[in-house]
Image 1 (tube, rainbow, N blue to C red):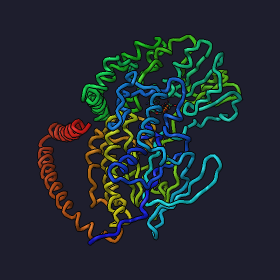
Image 2: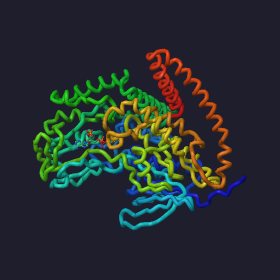
Image 3: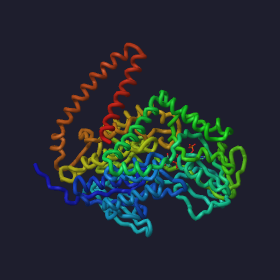
Image 4: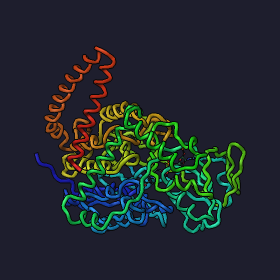
Length: 571
Ligand code: NAP
């Protein structure tokens, strides 16, 4: 039976870069749509005046990548002439703009445009979008057959709930919205927070000896060195002109960063974790004044919160104009910060390096069964199928959705791989909609719950279940933003849709179901095989506890290595 292609098929992509991957979340589907389908009936809605997301908004002094810069380039748009092993914010933004122009993507971007609301119209099978011009407030209505969300997690600055915070009379701003009009020369600056952002700007602002910095920290962090090593002219030449040299370099960085993942398994009780813990303690103690030697060693296991890649923060703590305190803040007064011990630190400027609101999806989305917020609340926090689709939200897709942001913790390469896996996955799901066979696709509740239960089960066994962090709902709840295995595993799962896990409607739904029944049979065969192996493992498990642990760990290990190898072949 032949179907009439949907001539009105169009796609709205929301956000031209908000996460660490810069514009890539939005651009990967855009590039794939053009390259694979020759399709360009899509619009990228972006609130800002330009591409860049977090790399456009975060302009604080010292803002730079703390992961190797070669992994910041798309495999289709390599950049052999990065100056150093780690790039600065202006360099990364520049690269993004270059890719945008080279790929001709700027004409698809609707800048200064906020998608305020999206509601699924089940009669017309389209998303009804309410958009507004952020400069004028002017509102418009539009429609899209499919909605791809490229909204990242590090978007909305988070301010601590401190009594009297509004009463402060001096200058005050968040690190993600640095106020460059404020001259810090000769000022007393209170910095709240000691995460990755603060660790980058504290050494920069305190390089001026007239600036007095008091850094209010709450929890000690793990630190590892991450120096900016310059690439020699010869290296850059080799990257540019000798085939595969640059790709091998990226491959090796990928291997290194993915290997780190194994330190996060078994709640951090493993040799690799012990090794990193020792190395980090030695590093901290070798860099900071003796008075901090004990207070700066975290009680949480290594990697539970994001490890801070030190690019000068620890040495800066030796400066006479920098003081670090773990005294908790009690409240803010018009001219200073008061600690719970009753000490008042007079300051002229307060900089909040207090991170981002991460567990709230910043768009009002309503599917046929309710809003995304209601769905998330009913599940104890954000959840999605393969981090990409959500039950009850037809033709809605998330790039770097929940449980996918492991790049923020350890690495980038593998995450890029996930994104590279997500873009074709989305296209595969949308192809029958474009062709008029289906009108809508969304994952089943049962498949999504099963997938997420499995992830939660495995996450329980990782180091991230051991402390409060922004990876968890409300800091202490369910882990929603990290993936419990090498990300190549997810990439492997994404490589082809399992249609039996999806609900779909449309004129060809019945035939589509029948056509994909064969894959259900293949699945059944796999399940039977896994079941047989599982029974064998179970039988061994009964024989002794030691053996059972061994079988469990060996099983996980084999699975990890297997996924890891797949990834290595695919970089
Ligand atoms: P963050 O890691 O969430 O750190 C926030 C900091 O604020 C923590 O130290 C937190 O302490 C502290 N804080 C919050 N409320 C406080 C209070 N009332 N009193 C004292 N301290 C308080 O935020 P971030 O440093 O902006 O980094 C966010 C993410 O951005 C990072 O995890 C990383 O993924 C990314 N990032 C990446 C780069 C890069 O180079 N690629 C650079 C910067 C940031 P607690 O730990 O006690 O909560």
